[in-house]
Amino acid sequence: MSSGDARDTLPDALIEYLAGGRLVAGATVDADGRPYTMVMNSVIAVDAHTIRFALDHRTHTLAHLRERAAMMLEVIGDGFVFGVRGEARIVKELMERCPVPSALIQFDVEAVKSDLPPGVQIKGIEFDWGSLAPVMGPVEARMFEEIRAFDLS
Image 1 (cartoon, rainbow, N blue to C red):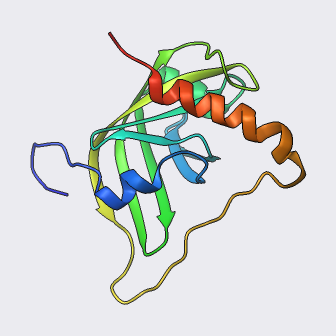
Image 2: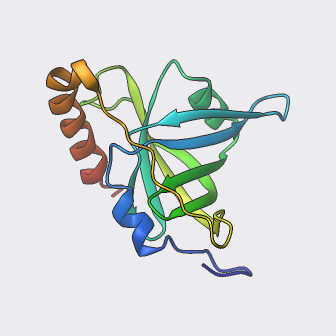
């Protein structure tokens, strides 16, 4: 994490944590300039500067990103809370391996800040498909594969 004109990088612990299947809160800005939040579980850190995720075509978040690229992510894991600011853009309008029509989003990291106060202990949020696991597990694995394998060139 740095300050100034250079882009921040994601800490190693955050890259390892964002391997898919973790709940991450995202915030965009609507047409009236008001914040809008949602929770996502498809977030994958590709490298220290890049995060990708799928967004359902029906979401307000995708509509907001079509108008303005500014976005903030809040990631709560075991022993850390990070706020990550950046710009998000659609790199693939229709993903092939999502259970619902979804766009592939690339989030370019600009700034990373620790939001965990000194001395505070925290455990990450756990996500489980429950009774949907037999159906969603394989679907989710294919979706994560598509997110990881996407090549901009």
